Image (cartoon, rainbow, N blue to C red; front, top):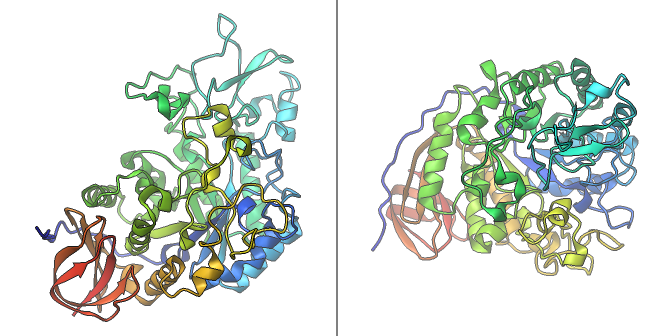
Length: 539
């Protein structure tokens, strides 16, 4: 029996003034895995610079680069030892300056990762802080006396397993680390810490960086009374030990909004820059990070598509919920994957990954792509002896490792995928079949689809500035509309494994995920193949 797709509910939105980060599409680069210029098996800044033309050809507008700061690499750059320099593994400040200039010359914006919740224990600030209780930087980190039994001050946990507290025998106190013990949490209640971190932002803004993605933004402030977190009644052991407790006193504290506003003010002093926040929270809390009077993060990252069930009703409900929760004038954003989550091709399969690409690039708001998704890269199985990720090493066997989605970019079908001339830091996947060079020569490849979708966004103002309307789902079919004064586009996505007949007014096909039916006429209904999406223009 064929499914009929009703009109659904209209989502009304206010008109917007378009900024580059509203019109544009962001592309995330994990620098260790993008392109290696010197043969050491690890990607670097010159490697990124040498591959900018791929991003231009793809049609994205900005690149966000994961951390490249000096670091002992306990958590691969998320343990920062100097906020105002570049790790020699990746290059030099001069290399970064050349990257910024080369990106800008091609019309690309450059967004840096900023990691303010914690530093490395090798940072000079922490070395001074742990030297004695009297040092001037003691209060730059979070130190507490032991509990009455000599153990940790409270029950706070680390995201990578175990207690969030580490004993320091020299000064006989515990310090807080929300992640690894090598990543001590900074004390954001200390004005001197805030001033130093904002100076670090200015250092990069002065060099021409166009914005920041802020790591774990919702964790920056902890409870000043250090109260125990309550048990999580929904805890499942396969989720890791951190989820045993609800992070009531270690996450999303009200005072964090003042910090977000202060960061935003720093960026506003440099003109049109963008502040993006990594925030894993339910929608009703996520949208609070737009800030009072929209003076918070421009784009609190919306990860709903990453964890949502891949079904039309679930996605339609989630899209409507998110749009309804947005504050007036707030700009939405969407993400399919990142360096912490399994790749979309592994989550939904290669066929549905094409449908997911159309979904991401036709919803209202700013999309962010993860490197390699544009060619259909999938997670790569990592043998136990090859594991690099501390999340997996600390809690092996429960699927928390992030190495599979961080493997090197495949540029060509050669033995090392064009990524390096040395031994890659992680194994490559099916690069002989899935790589940029082969995809460029295939008119119906995943890369061809991404390039066509991104070109369509540039061609059709309805897809960048138009409202999102009539979001609906029946069976496996998800539909919605985008429009401007001249154009009314319907997006029709088959999330199922069987062909479907979908009622639709007189229209013409603008684009199919199969890339084989442009300009086909539609009058009354359209036949969709399994795992096919189409954009149609109403006549």
